[in-house]
Image 1: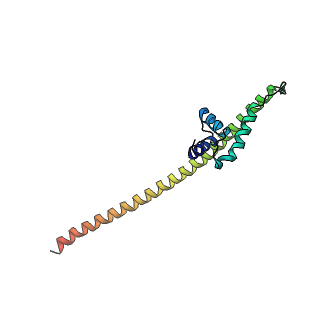
Image 2: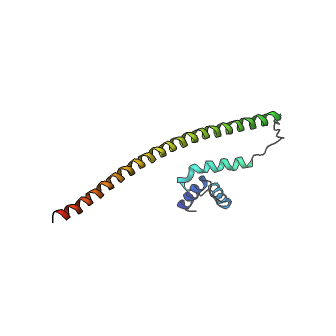
Image 3: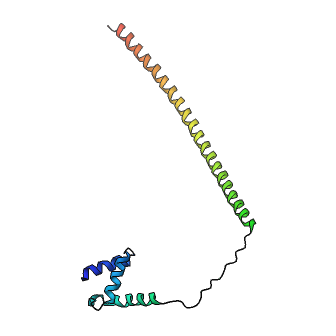
Length: 144
């Protein structure tokens, strides 16, 4: 195989994206005597993989059993803690929401009062303008 193809295949191999056929072709290449001198450091790696694959465990493997004691009160305690946290979070959010609603209601009342004040001032201005219109009419009658 040519150097660039092997180099690309090694990149894919080290990213863990090779197929079994590609891995097999890499093993065959690095076990042959025709390895490119630039790729010689990888020969040691693939040789170690081959040796590790040939190792066999002699004897039996005994795994220690974990003794898990089930305490029924732990699930109840966990449920109690979770429900306590949920209730306190709900109460906290309700008080914050009530305070926000109070602030919004106060702001609404203040803006409503300001609107009434502005409407009263506009009404006074309208009355004054109607008096000016009447003055213009009477002035035009007498000054002609």
